[in-house]
Length: 465
Image (cartoon, rainbow, N blue to C red; front, side, top):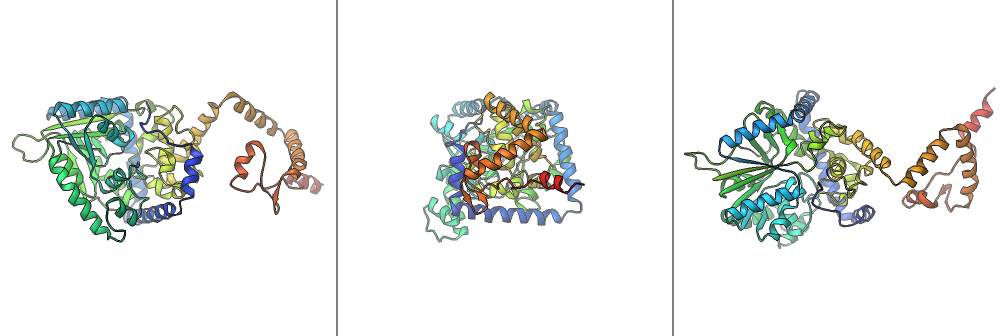
């Protein structure tokens, strides 16, 4: 049950490319710093942010615990209004169902609102292969589609692009003002909305007791995708559900403040099915596709709380690793700390096995998470699982090392041998510049402190009575 995209290059190569791109790092630092500051300001306006966070976590925990029951309630309510609900096991099931619906309606043109799940299943390439045109209508996603790239951030897909780079993608002069670039994109997209046969969106939340899909945007393109085309398809992860509409205000307070520092997004839409009798707005036909792709098997495991995520992107904005390498270096549509957790969980084949190591374990991601996911603990657990599944020679080597260093006698012997052997290594002042074998991974990017001429134990023994 993999993520449809696979990394195009090895992890070390992706990181090296990102670190060498000064403009990329400047763009990312500027945007993430602004988002992080806006989040703190917005949360500071609340009377008790900690209590709201605890409430949000409880809402998500309850929903994940009652997932089958809530899905049944959601399905019953949507189908009672003439909508259709489909459970998709993997990316192929999602793309297959969308293509099936499109062909049933003779659809040739699709407009899309922002949807990370559609990126996860590589929907646009699948539609293109089927001869169906699919156009992104969120401005950031539109730029990314023009560039032929994956999103670099969960909420700001083109965060890594400067205004000049965005202008180039739109075919405008580099000094074109941002407002003019937005107007240019709007002009191009308007006609596509009118021509589209199908509109596709994601969903920020699913509400079980009302049978609704909640879509949060700042551009209003979601409303064009859900009202103008004859058919609306919403593609949402199975975990995005909450039990009650009464819980929605608290979740929206957390989502918008954590994502962009807004009290509320410009547009919050609640879609509960196709256009009803006597109604003038809305599609003739509505489909909700719920994607599993490994999510359901996380329930009841130590990784269950990863399903609490509301995709706000706050953990990316405070992560020192993401701030240096950006989103594309992760190789997954889900970058940053949450991506380093869910990407290997959703794709256990090993394509993202290195991502849990892309962390300083500083805990900033947990502090920023609006539902209190212990991301640093999740990353440590995934590292431990990676060690247990390592090739047997590697496991044997580290088991021997652990045994040797578990004894004061053998540890001291190692130090004595190392103190002599390090004399053969090149130095940079007092520091070791290059180490052999597996230690070379350390010294390729930093100097290694040498073993002291006299260890603490030796000094202590001399001072004891």
